[in-house]
Image (tube, rainbow, N blue to C red; front, side, top):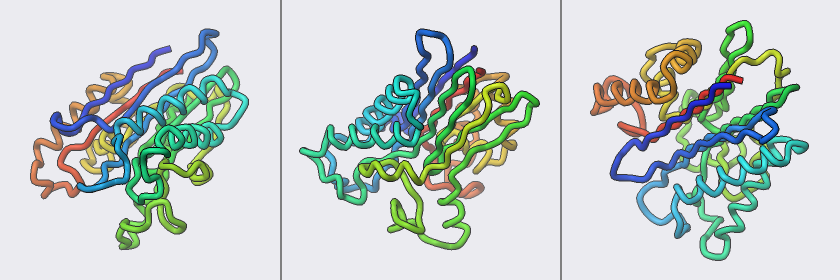
Length: 256
């Protein structure tokens, strides 16, 4: 088994709001991975005294522990419980009803000798390489569809007809894109926050298959380095429109 992980802040003056980790059981059979992309709020009050990095660390740690130790319950239930635990950890000090309360996108995957399960919520990505070499992206494309239809995203976060992130409501896990595959049909996985998937989705340096080939050959840090090079080549965001000139990026690559 080969597992590599890399993450980097978009701005060295700000803490990295992405979170990524992998858990492998002592039995050596299977494992779990979690990647979160914390949602940076606009300048101003978000109702929380802790901040997004605190939130992603709490939520990510809880989800990783639950997905690894509670293997008899689905990933959606693991995410619901992780959200509930995280909410309880700051309910007494923070306004969890605030629309900008800390929140994150989620990618989770879990595998054993029988199957591979996955969950994606919002605009991070999971890539699945099958044993025949085909690479399939698992995407929650609600944001892309809303933008393509000309909608402004303000007011559509965690609202019916909009898009969803993991914040303080455990019920949001039901909105995630989920699935499972036979373990024998999967060779490798890659989880990317949108700061890393820019290589494909913003800069068009290659498709998902090329992205996976880069990860296999050079590893996650190489992908992040190439994204940074593309960002620095277009500092004013004129050639490639994007919300931030540089974004936090996190990648896990796992050969099963």
